[in-house]
Length: 115
Image (tube, rainbow, N blue to C red; front, side, top):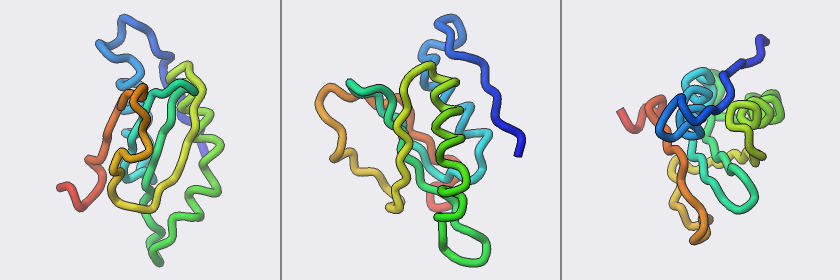
């Protein structure tokens, strides 16, 4: 598999370069159905829901095969520490966000339930 290469975050690229970097990464990874990126005191927390396999409703194979590579790619793109987490629920309710956290990106255009 060819690794994803993204340009590093730079202040001149976008009004919110971190959000733009996450959006570009999401666009390049069709296995990721939904993505939430949250900036907190520990870095960037990225939650994803994945496309299930074609022969069932299993997301484990894609997660096991890609999670470390994806976290590394996101870290390179955003130039921040990244904690990548998979969630199985189709919605993220925000309950796990503390008062100092900021939502950087909410991406779901690939999710068929939102079209």
